[in-house]
Amino acid sequence: MSEARTLYSLDGKRVWVAGHGGLVGSALMRRLERDPCTVMTVERAKLDLKRQAGVEAWLKDARPQAIFLAAATVGGIASNDARPGEYLYDNLMIQANVIEAARQTGVEKVLVLGSTCIYPKFAPQPIAEEDLLTGPLEPTNQWYALAKIAGVKLAEAYRRQYGFDVISAMPTNLYGPGDFFAAEASHVIPALIGKIHTAKTRRAASVEIWGTGRPKREFLHCDDAADALVFLMTRYSGHSTVNVGTGEDLSIRELATLIAEIVGYGGGFHFNTQRPDGTPRKLTDGKKLAALGWKARINLRDGLTATYEWYRAAHADGRVRA
Ligand code: GFB
Image (cartoon, rainbow, N blue to C red; front, side, top):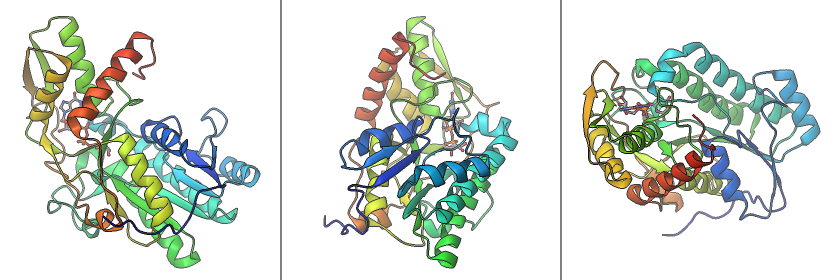
């Protein structure tokens, strides 16, 4: 597979990973260790990205040349449904502040993150980038989706009006080490790893799965996602957002069965249909990124096995964010 040529090299550059402590941010930190660039970070306690003046002042002082905007208020289906104000306000402010301050301070390139959950609820499958804004959103996460759509469109608007090199990527559901494992607020993979691990240790007969188990999801390991984002930062510059996924999906029931096998749990599942299924399916069409020469490498079974091993070690020494 031929790879697109390098359009923007990170070698020798000051690169800010905004949101360096999150699932994507920490994977980017690991990935950028391989590149001869100076990685910059700032703790949330020192800089609130929701405050415009603070972001402008920090960028004027720090002067990064490239920015991976991986900072966001994120969570699973229940958290999105329960905190609409935060998901809409936080993500609007973070994106608007960073993109505008980057433009004002002469940053050379910015990569903004969307998510496949911002596509229409009933988009044709697999979902192509052109399907954005062609239908109603999934109600449980419409707030997050509206904010992330605004970020993807702001990137496009700044390219058109200012010729500013802002690109956006649309990763599918991500998982991996450093994820958030709170049973109620997290995404499905960390939630099921935690619940099934607990059920095994307590010899529980059954584990609750939210919804019907019928929805299908595509999952990409965060290290693959980080590699794809660095690939796009260095080899892509265009108006269109770019899907980042694996091109394979499975049902939530199949996922739970796979995680139970990896954990070594022999109990059963019961499906709580009082909890929402959310979008029935959101498989990405990866043609655009494949044409540029990138492909995911970590298969789901291996990725889940490594993530469970990380979880067990992190759980033992209190590093699991729950
Ligand atoms: O990962 P998840 O919370 O988010 O849920 P989405 C995926 C599917 O897993 C849903 C089911 O059908 C859930 O009902 N599920 C089953 C569970 N058991 C559980 C459980 O114990 N916990 C969780 N969390 N789910 C998110 C968006 O949608 O996609 C976010 O809400 C974000 O904004 C993310 O963009 C990528 O995949 O449904």
